[in-house]
Amino acid sequence: MSDTLQDKLDTLAGLLVDGSPHAVALGMKLVRVSPGEAVIRAPYQAESIGDPETGVMHGGVVTALLDHACGTAAFAGLGGDQAVATLDLRLDYMRPAKPGCDVIAEARTIKVSGLIAFVSAIAHDGDQNDPVATAHAAFMVTKASQAAAERARAEVEQHMASEKAGGAAS
Amino acid sequence: MNERLHKLQSSPYVSRMGVRFDDHGDELTAILPYDEWLIGNPLIPALHGGAIGAFMEITASAGLLAFTELAALPKPIDVAVDYLRPGKPQDVYARASITRQGSRVANVRVDAWQERRASPIASLHGHFLIKPIKSGD
Image (cartoon, rainbow over the protein chains, first blue to last red):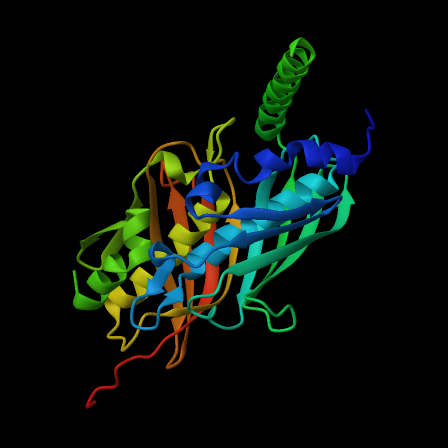
């Protein structure tokens, strides 16, 4: 088995969004993850509307989407085996998202310094050059997140070992 | 609770978050009741940073709507959130204070806490676009 970071991220891809109840509840889908980068989509849904008069998605959904995309990019930037906690998240809301359109967040790790990753992201509803919002965030590997990551890794390894055993038996 | 605040509370996203407002005189506390779907990382377990951020944005809007006559819901221009402690799987409380309110823009700070108000789990400051109802309108 190859040990490249992309292989590791591909193995974990199913957990990065689907392993987070809040991300699942908002309907987020992982579009792509690569070393230091993540793209996640949040669908337009009736429960996400902030202002019924305009039908515009609530800024809070965009906040959660950008936080999740930035966190995933930070995880992928820190080598894919150290879970991270958000230190701070700064958001600029440039315009309302178009009613009926999904919002896509594209996050990129600018720099990793020790246990800290600096990430920036844009959220758009189809055109990258016309962002709905942008984000700048810092993430850190904390003791609590690290212990959680170790438990997750053990679970994934156990799952893979049992799949391998199942595959060999059939 | 005034009509605008009620409108905020009954908007689809805010009502789905389950946010409630408790207003006593000139103090308004927002409550985010704990639910499993607010969890970001089930292995710690910790509340999703995005859910805490969203709750504080709602609190900022509520703080503006509670004490000012506004013609529309406030719109966030920019917000900055500092995460101070992991959010435990329990209710979160938040209070907004309006640092400055002009005729179009308000500057708001929000603190969120769980067990003790003196140990906040997150704080937010941001600018919001507002449309005050002018006297005589």
